[in-house]
Length: 171
Image (cartoon, helix red, strand yellow):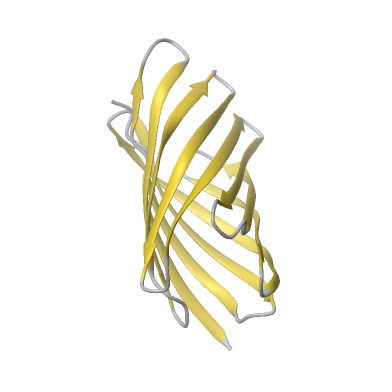
């Protein structure tokens, strides 16, 4: 069976100086055969010309549960490789989340790559990996607006077709 998932990300940042910034992620997650959820990640980030990292608190609301967690993110960007790594843990249940994506730019608008999304929960280990294709629409408030289509082959659950919309305004 094949499931569908849509994710909307709003990632505004507010510069504090040349490198430090306040970071926020607001995420809407709608998935077939799973509880929908909304997420809020406030925190602090540090960026250079080639990489960035963020330390965040995490609040998730869903019909199944409301939970708090901590989350760390790292991004690397150069002309030949884009890398994104996210590691999160829920505080109450100690569930772990690891997401890694790597993309190769195919010109200014298109990127092709792979992603892996993995969870460790009390019910077991949930692993997923597959290809992704991204399109950069342009910029909004000096940050990119990107749509990504991904296909994840999943272990212990249905494979997923995912559609992401990510907006990164820099304020």
